[in-house]
Length: 128
Image (cartoon, rainbow, N blue to C red; front, side):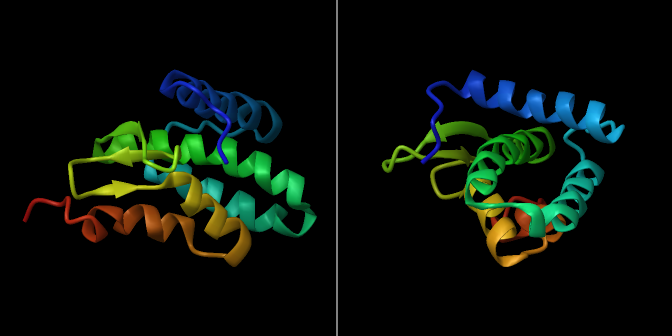
């Protein structure tokens, strides 16, 4: 369960990821596809070191960062769903759950950068 109350807190969590990783890893994250790809590799590199508590925190923080990356690249807005989970909503039929995407990546090694890259196709957002 995500423990935030306002979408502004999600943006703050995303900025925290940028601030901490830029200092710790000397990387300039900017919500771009390249930054999501870097985060994908970072998680892969550190996955074996993570316990359940680490994964919970990273799912919350990295989920906020991924959500902001989705918003910056594909549009949408933060909205809580009926289960009180934060989602990026594009319209009445299309939404994405960045926290679930990060959770799947942490637990099942899904390719985060590929999920991000193909999100518009999956949601039928690309204009042809």
